[in-house]
Image (cartoon, rainbow, N blue to C red):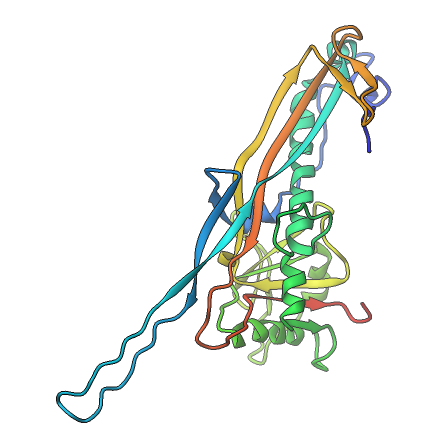
Length: 310
């Protein structure tokens, strides 16, 4: 565990110029797919419940008699449990480094912290990587357990056929595919592909507000480092992936206090060593809604396309 990381003068050398250079060229901060495309639910408490239909009502034919008896039915609901877990980190910087920097260091650090938080949430929700206790198994873990897994090449055709067959696993379970997640490099495998009518399977994004699509449904790229290369794509019903937000990212700056390691040993005394610390915290929960379907008793609203040999 890291308790003594600090942005030093060497780390900020590019931001403390000898003369001018006020412009900073920084790559675009990639977004979290969980924060941008999951169904978001506000959590009024640390543990929240969302009802999901578990028993469907039924209808029955009445006999030929004018006074035939009508049967009864019922519906039932189960609760999805969202448990908020905290993400947090502290970024300390010596005051002298802040004073000598030619730009707002905090304005540069905050977007990268948001990106780091997004990576953690995406990796846990999609693949179960470093998943906190109390969270559901990840989308991929549950999809594989439900048998909703297809492998690249199993169709004997190109990858567009594999994608279509992965969709079919979701559709056979009574759900519609309205979202697809993949790593950005999949674009090179999709360009030039055509369906049976000769139309492009892959449509690139027309602008920043219109995402790319495959078979008419959005595909979002996980480019923040969270993607597990074992898989080519995850598809399903975006409304079934629930991200509970108890507390959005909150930043606080401290000029006094101490930072200790896991044993309680003081690593940095902000007041005595003239340092500033930015603390970022966030509390979120995750769960998958799997309402009962009339098509399949044990269906699941997501499927995964696995790379061959994985």
